Structure formats: C-alpha cells, structure tokens
Amino acid sequence: MFFKTKPWKALAVTGALAMALTACGSEETGSANGEEEYSWQFVTEETPGQVQYEYAVEFAELLEEKTDGRVSMNVRDFGSLGSEVDQVEQLQQGILEFGIISPGFTGGLVPEGQVFSLQFFFPDDQEVTQQILNESVALNEKLAAFYEAQNIKPLAFMSEGAMQWTGNSPLRSPDDFNGFKMRTQESPLMLQTYGAYGADPQALSWSELYTSLDRSVVDGQENPIFFIQDASFHEVQDHMTISNHNTYVAMVTVNNDLYESLPEDIQAAIHETIDEMRPRGFEIQQQLNADLLDEIKNDEANPTEVYELTEEERAAFREIQEPIHQFFRDEIVGDEGREMFDLLVEEIAEYQE
Ligand code: 6CS
Image 1 (cartoon, rainbow, N blue to C red):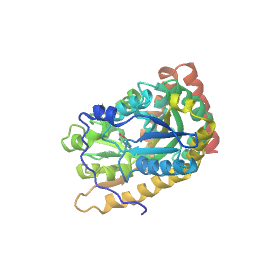
Image 2 (image 1 turned 90 degrees about the vertical axis):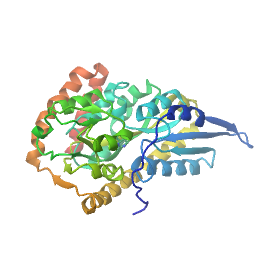
Image 3 (image 1 turned 30 degrees about the vertical axis):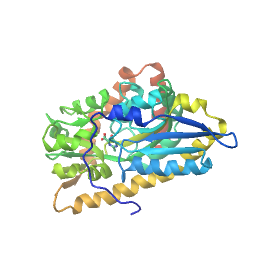
Image 4 (image 1 turned 90 degrees about the horizontal axis):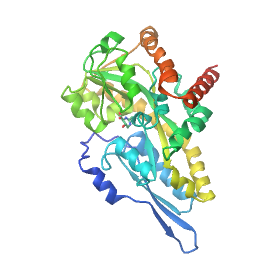
C-alpha cells in the first residue's frame, strides 16, 4: 500500500471557525522577477490516509511544480476549520481558496447538486461513472454554473467509491429501514431518500458520527468502504451491507472570484493539474476501498458481519428510489435544473450502451 492508514482520532472542532479566521487568508506576494506569487489554503473534509486528503497533497505538489513554485498550497485536513458546512462558507467567502467538498453538504445552497444524493442513478460500474463525471456537459458546465453563481467553481467531480450501509442491525430489505435512525449529510433530498424506506433520517457532521453511532443516537450510516474503516465506524456497528446504492462524489473546487482574477498561465496550470490528477484520484480510491474492505473483514477484535445484496434485493430498493429521480426533476429544481437533469439522463444512457 502506498500510504499508511491512520486510525480514527477524535476531532476537536469546537471554536474552530475562530481559529480558521486567524489561521487562513489568501496571500499574493510579488517576486523578484515581477511575477505574482500565490499562497493558498486547500481544505478537505477528510484526514491523512483518506482519499480527499491524499488527493489534495498530490494535487498541491503537482501544481507547485507546474508553476515553478509561484503557487504554494497548504493542505488542511478536516477538524480545525469547523464542520463541512462551515468549510463551504469559508470557501465561498474566499477565506479558503481551494476545497474538496461533498455536494451532500451544499443541498440548501445549490439544490441542483443534490443529483448526487439520488440512489441507483449513476451506473454501478465505477469506471463508467468516473468517465461520466469527467466528461459530462450536464455536470461540468450546467451544474458547475449553479455552483459558480454561489462563488464556488467546481474543477472536477471525483468518485470516492461506491457507498455501502452500516447498521446496528442487518439492512437487507427496505423494511429493515423502518424506524431506523439513519445518519445523512446536510441535504434535504438525502433525508427524503431514506424517508422513502420508512427510516428516521438525521443530518450530522461526520465529526460527530462515531460517538453518535456508539451511543445509538443514530443506528447507521452510509459511506464508501475506505471511510467506514478509516473512521472506525465498523468498530461501533455490527453489520455492513454491500449495497452499492450510490457513488460517493466529491468536488474539487476553487473560490470563483479568485479563479477569475488569475492570469491565464496560472489558470492553465490548474486545469493541467486537474486533468493529470483524474486517473490518480480514481486509483487512490480504488486501492483504499479494496484494501480497507479486507481490514474490516479481518478485524477480529471488532467483528462486522459483511453481507452483499443480491441483484434481486437491490431491485427492491431501486424500485422505491426511482420515483425520487423524477421528484428531483419535477419538484426540486427549476427549468435550468431540469435541462441539466434531462441532459445527464441522456448522457448516462449513452455511456451505458
Ligand atoms: O460521511 C461524511 O460526511 C464524510 N464522508 C466522506 C467519504 N468524506 C468526507 C465526508 O464528510
């Protein structure tokens, strides 16, 4: 394995926003040859050994190299700058320049981004889904414009792997979710997707999730395998269901005002870095998800029953979720959002052929 997995550590976020305001800030400094130099903060929602953080470290190195050191980036892990939603706000305000954010934490800000909360919507094949994320006009132009209107520019959409369920009871049929206290991210539509199974969903930051599972404040959660293991959720959950009910998508973003103010050569270096990092991001998640599934299975001190749904069992969940795809199109978004959705549906069909 190319980097060491770290055990979950308690995240102290109290008072973090105040610290963030003193610790961060964009800097532009002149250089000896008269070219502008930049010092940027790159925030992630994850910690060392996890996909977003490892991606950001490699991204920062590559961009620094491509700009001959005119850009320097300080990669920040999750925990010291507040919750995921706090980080989004700091990115919007330009307190932070770059960030990897999960659309699940922007459901109130950009309702169209909730397309990533739809279960059984993107193809099960992770490589096909990543190709759609890389090339889709609906996502990279139309959805990106909704975020840009909020001063956040998505530069890339990346899969962190297929999502699975964990619970303190087995989750094999929609009925198993009846009254189940399901943790979700801060997205109204995500709450609805679990409400459709009869669950009692609750939005929480992941900084509170281990303790909330341990104390049965919530009964279960969804995440890619690497995150379940690295955040040690399996230690406080008896069951894991390989459901592949969705893909965990994160966005690599930059503050839009900052981006617009940059000279063309720096913008070009950013895009080259994004393109070169695409296969690398995919590889990081693939390796972590494979390795850490074995760690969960082999963890004798914390036994977790791992159950893979059959296609027939998945179909029972899909049947309940499909009307929500239409609900998103008809009720959640406006005309431009509908155009985005219709185009995305067409694109997905083309890639699946
Ligand atoms: O469940 C969450 O909220 C977290 N999951 C992942 C895979 N990344 C960061 C996010 O906050």
